[in-house]
Length: 470
View 1 (tube, rainbow, N blue to C red):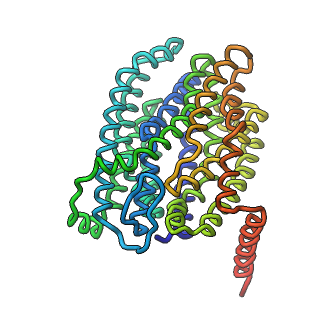
View 2: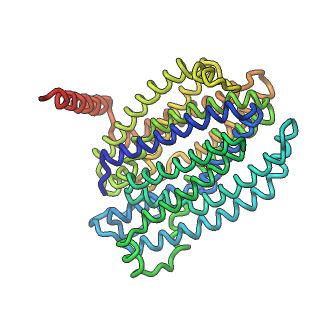
View 3: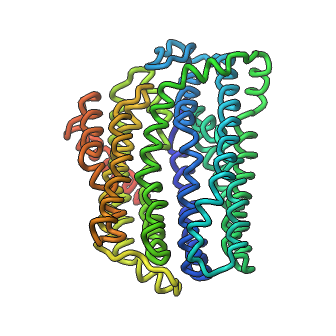
């Protein structure tokens, strides 16, 4: 498995496409939708993460174990890994893994639909109590949205298998095409006045295109021919093998959901829709920066897993340091631009919704940087098929909700309570403990950062010299 600059370039291109989608769609959304609908869309955004929540860690485990199989591993283990002695792919093992993925996500999609249908009348009716617009339109958008999420969950495995196989470039090409379709559909419907339904139909169309292309990319002629020669009868046993670590990762995902989106859903019961609209677009802007910061790291994540099963500490260390340097660069540049020009940009497009004030934005950026760095360190630890800190993660998620409720009841901090509830809880333990644990495990020191930084400078110097050479 070789992941190189082309994969990285295509990943940045895909990330840029997602950013372009936000840059084009969000201003139109803020300009054309009433502030109340912008606030309601924040609920939709929060529920988008339900697919990763019901995934319950299996996507990470499936993708990582596919990397193991393509690295030559002949046996999947509940904890740890079998060292790869050859690079030959065991297609029988791969077929069992693919069967397990299909069965798992089928069950999860059905569970999601059941919960969505039963819970919607209670939650959405409460949220729409003060809403002054057309509630039937919101209910229609909500129903289409639920169906789209169910389909996304049922086909969740396609992204995981492409990344696990190391087909990063192909996955990013699929992402660019599907995002382009989503952009065209969303903008066209918005301009024709379909409001919130435009965003939902755009999402559904993009998902359909994404899954179709991802399926074709993975099941090429050679792969289909070799899989056809194998029999898969061990799907449920494969799920049992992966379940312990997957469930731990699932609890981590649940905790992250509570910290990032669960508290937001609760906040809608305490804060006004205009207040939540300002928080929503600020959170989206900060999330874009965080996503850009993680792009380099996730491009090479399957290679990190490969280094783990081949016990290559130096390779693991190098990739982690480069990921950190890229993260710092993106937060300094992107965060600075958001603080300096974010509010002016919204005024330029005559948006009815504004960003939070700069002190609040700075706190969101700071807490997001620390959490993203911690996620990167945790991902490197998990790459060796062990899941540390899952108990601490669960506690942090519960504490974030409790801290938020206490702040709402005993303080008048308002939106600031949303920022502090998760940020302070994470800084109390996970944000410093996880990176420190990884640093000790891979024997990471300050001189290692300097060495990698100097290598970057030498590359830039070489590029500059080549550019000016006759």
